[in-house]
Length: 279
Image (cartoon, rainbow, N blue to C red; front, side, top):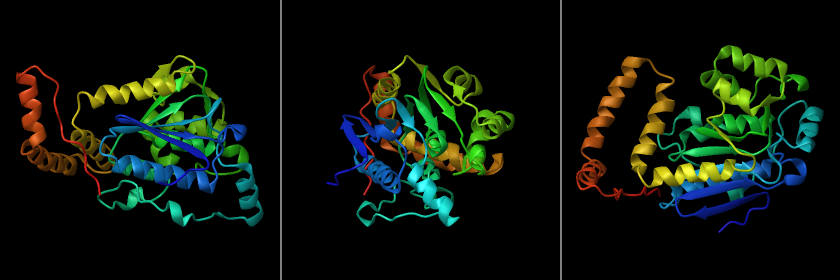
C-alpha cells in the first residue's frame, strides 16, 4: 500500500475521497501531488466496492493552481519541467486506450467511475482545470473560481479551451479566460459550471451523499457506459453516435444487470447489481 505525502485518500463504503493536503499553499499542485492523485484514482478504479470518487482540498481552498516554486522553475527554463515518480506510475481508466485521454487532466474523462469535484474554496489555475474536467462540480456558496492564465502571460492551459466552452458556452469561457476575474459560486452556477450550490463547508458531504444515493439505485456498468458515451460522442457526429449507442444497447439488453433491474422493479425491492471488476 502506497503512503501518500501530499494527498489524503479514504474509502468509506461506495465512496472514495481524495483530498489535496497542502493547506499552507492553498493546496497548490506539485508534480508529486499530481502523481499521487492519478495513483489514487487508479486505486479507486480497481476497488470493486467504490462507485465513484470525490476530489477536494484541505482547509480553506480547493486548489490554488501550480506551486509557485514550479512556476518559477518553468519561467527560468522557458519550458515545462517536471519530475517522474516511478513508484506512483498508474494508468487510471481509459479502457479503450483513447489517445484523447492520455494527458492530464483529460484522463479524468476516461475514468470508468464518476469523479466529482467538491469545490470548498479558492479554485484557480490548474486547480480550476482539474475541477473543470471532473464529471460534476459541487460548490460551496463561498467558493470562487479564477482561470489565472492571462495575468501570467499564458494561454488557456491543460485542455480547458476544449472543455470549458462545452460546459458554459464560448462567450462565458472567453470571459473567464480573458478577464481572469474571480467568479463567485452563484455566477458559476448560472453559467452551468457549478452543478450544485452547497452551504458553506458542505460541498464534500453533498458530493459524497450524491454518490451514495446512486450507489443504491444504479448499475455500476451503466454508470461507466453512460460516461463513456457522453465523452466519446461529444467528439462525433450524431449518426456515428447513434450507431454505437445502438450496438451498446443490444449488449446491455443481454447483461444480467438488465434482468436484475427488471426483476427488482417488478418485485419492488432494491436492485443487487454486480460491481465493476477491474484488473
